[in-house]
Length: 180
Image (cartoon, rainbow, N blue to C red):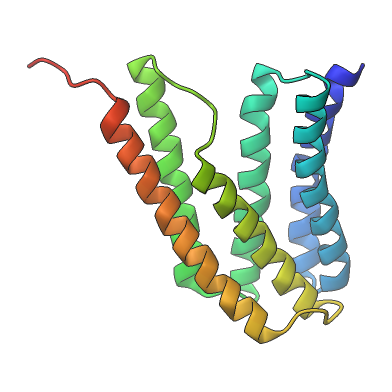
């Protein structure tokens, strides 16, 4: 039974995405903040349960980052549409995610794919979660400041760029050269 808990939490996070988009799009920022916070907590809990209970699965290795990306990209796009985030940052985040998908495709084709994220990618995900939470906390309950949001926009820009560069370097090192 415990073996299924991490994947169930991940599926709940995926199901939260359209609700979060609706809440933000309709201006229910306090409710969006609490839902986003709960979804972020499921990300921490599902990983901890999987590790502690030896409940890691191949499905979870794919679903967890998919749920993270769905939640964050959806949140960033709808927050941009509402005027809360700059377009350049959203484009940077989405381009980095496209890069990671291409990275995965290259590795699968090379027969060397590993679903394990790079450490900088984990830092980047945490920074993106923090930024979205700060934006929602400022727009909703008023618990964050514009200064904090602006600072985290910079942090996310730096970690997103560093993470994208790290994936590019990893692809360059690990994909075998072909004979022509």
